[in-house]
Each structure stands twice: as structure tokens, then as C-alpha cells.
Length: 144
Image (tube, rainbow, N blue to C red; front, top):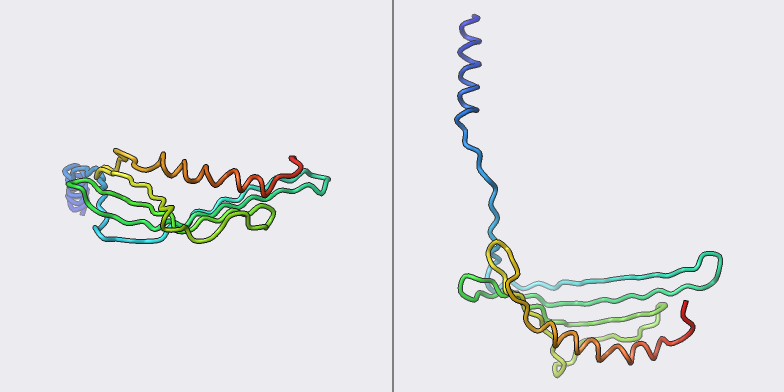
């Protein structure tokens, strides 16, 4: 009986000792032609405790995201579909983006995944910044 236990322990130890460790790998490879909608919503609220002062800002971006291939790299295209800005529950800016103001940001991603290039971010920032003066004029008032 003791001989069987020793044999059993040796078999288990040998099996564990010869099992190679496998490093986990991840390959970024979304299917070409995949599309989805991504909604990003940010809310900032400032309250002065003990006073009636309150400011709540909401920003919502709705992006259409698509995947295509460029050689062995993945091109991820983000197209802005809708932008909404609310201050104290009043809509300051909102609605569908006009086709003439198409806003798109592209990411070129390797299989590791690593972002190798960003395209269109400067233009997107210019378009969004051009909307800011109109938005801030509508919400001008006492600052906290």
C-alpha cells in the first residue's frame, strides 16, 4: 500500500514538473467590416455646500466605429454622429452632425495592440473648438 502511494506521488510530481508554462498571448484582430456605436457621456457637477450655487455640465458624444485592414494593421475609424452639451439641464449644443462638418478620427493599430498613428485629431479639435465660443456665450453668467 505504501508502495502505491509513493508511485502515485511520483506520477503527480513528474506530471507537474514536465508541464511547460505557457505565456498568455493576445492578438488584436477585430473582423474587417465590424461596426458599432460607442457613446461617451461625461458629467461634471460643482456644488458649493451650504449655498444654492450649483453647476452641472453634461457632454455626450456618439461615435460610429468601423474596422478595416491596411496590410497587417487595423484601421479603426471613429465618426462623430451626435454631440450634445447641456449646462444646468439646458441644452446648449446638440443634434446630429451635419454632413458638411464630418468629423472623423482614425487610429492605425498593430496586432500587439499598439496605436501607431492617429489621423484627423487636429481637425477634430479645430471643429470642436469652433463650437466652444457659441456654447460659452450661451452659458455666461456668474462663475463659481
